[in-house]
Amino acid sequence: MFTLNLMLPIDSTTNVNDATSWSAMQQSAGYVIGALGPILLGWIHDASNSFTPAMIGMIVIIILMILTQIAATRGKKVMESV
Image (cartoon, rainbow, N blue to C red; front, side, top):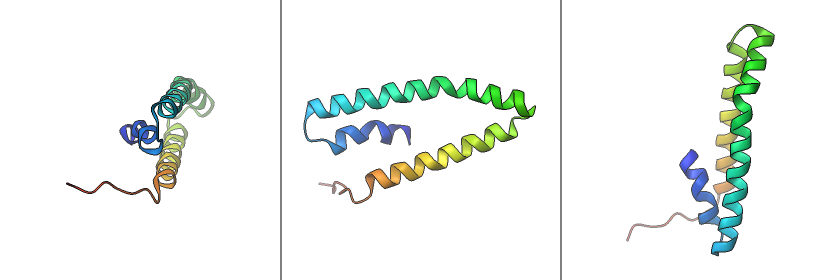
């Protein structure tokens, strides 16, 4: 899934400048969200004394990411083999 997300700006734009801008924004947001993950998991663990709620939360986030990726790429043409 991660590699598909990195290819989305290249696949969905028509010029280098748009792809570069979109990729930079995407990676910046991804690193910020990724840095907050361990902090949030720690807070959830401290509040519940269990990793189960944190794991359930991660599963929900993963499912949302998959659905977002499917929605973003729906209707795109797939390149045919030459």
